[in-house]
Image (cartoon, rainbow, N blue to C red; front, side, top):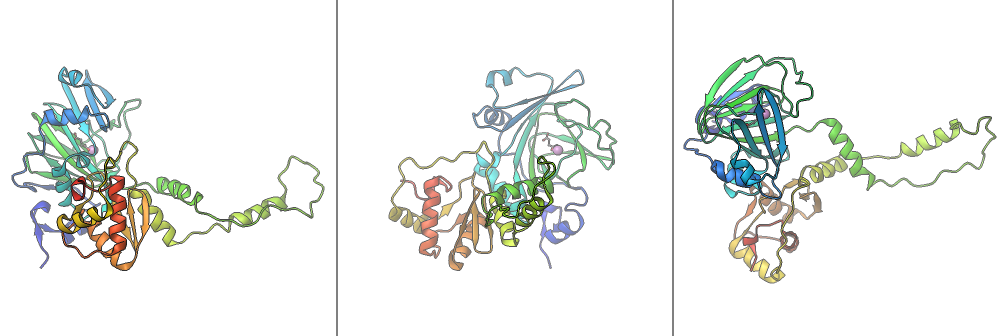
Length: 377
Ligand code: SIN
Ligand code: CO
């Protein structure tokens, strides 16, 4: 029998994936029993004021929507009145408890994970009716949020609004969520969340990249890797009536050369691993200022184990591990241990590791990609 999960309202992962994932919304009362939230409104506002915060502030004044991007000023935030909401992305990159919360959702591949966004709104606040290009689990923390969803086909947005808000919103179903309740929404499902009181919502988002974006980025990836031999030659050049015209011979010759550009599934896998593990542009890593020696690091690895830095993104495919956008091809034995690290974000003390793995981990440690506790002096 498949394990039924409280997180999924008593469904097994298989049942959830079969019947709901990417198909229809699911409301789960008490998905995380006892969940009270991971931080209070003031702590979230403080995060939104940090220099590298990826934060947004949405205000509604007399029916008009306003959007501002962080980092914000703490004094200005304290003066806010009326209907507003602050949303902070990437809370899992700064809060270990948030990274732990995400681990509950490991039944979805890491390659699909975006991040944990946390919002706070006083009564009446929200970001308006909209739809996202994401699968999202909306977990309620502090207070209550009224969630309305719609099955409408009409996706027209309010013109010239600073954020994407549906012009028309036909409420299909609605529920009030309290701490520990969770709503799963597939991409493109219209939704509107209104704070009933002081309200904090935890959004666990899974990206669904558009093929256009992937194709453009694949071409960027390819441009550094292609090799096309030879150069243009026209020893049999004929006089052209119109020298400004691109001749048929030239066209054919270049078309033939361009057609030689080839790629295979391995190129696609390498591109996906590098692209999807690439940190967002505002993310920086703190390399240790006084790194310990390789020997000392190897000892600490054996006695204490290691964990990925909260900001590190790691994916794997067929003897290659991808860490924060870089690909490392490794031997079989190393791959097994590194995949364990990518799956669980930790390697236990006493793990059997190859010399190659220890050397790579030391390199990652020096780049600031591992938690400092795993070997810092
Ligand atoms: C919110 O937390 O206020 C908004 C989440 C969403 O609608 O995606
Ligand atoms: Co949304």
